Length: 65
Image (tube, rainbow, N blue to C red; front, side, top):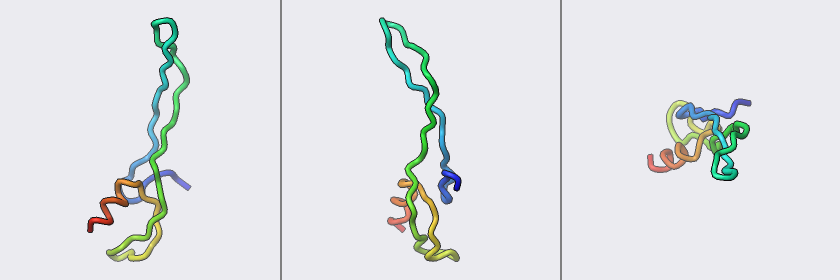
C-alpha cells in the first residue's frame, strides 16, 4: 500500500536532522517524513461512500463542503 493521499497526491519527503556538536553541525543520517494519512469515506461525487486514504488537510477541506 502506498503512503500517498488520493485527493492531493501528497507523499513522503526527505528531511535531515542536524546535531550541534561543539559549535559545529554534525552531519547525520537522512530521515523520511510521511504525511498523516487517515481512512475517510468520500461524502459526494461519483465515488460516494468509497473509503480512501487522505491527508488531514484534505479531510478538513472535505468537511467544509
